[in-house]
Image (cartoon, rainbow, N blue to C red; front, side, top):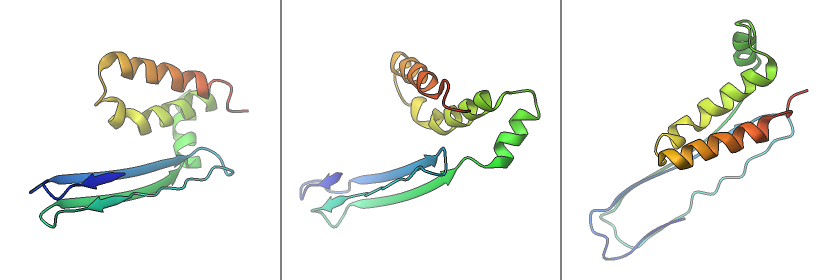
Length: 107
């Protein structure tokens, strides 16, 4: 939720809601919400939903990666723009948690 107060003159913001569907049963509900109290604010929002394609998996598996490794690489690539902005210790911990979550998730 983004809230722009009346005193926030010239404020700029971009809200991005991206979702990656990992299986056919996945779903995503994104609700970018903005409360704008100042008409000089420059605001943007966008949402995208994508799924892991068979072509992506095939490409990585054709280069010797298992399906589990390929899926992990795709998920890490999806999160990379976000983790790049985190302090290093948080990025390392998030990557570790993602690996644990993905472990055994395929097959």
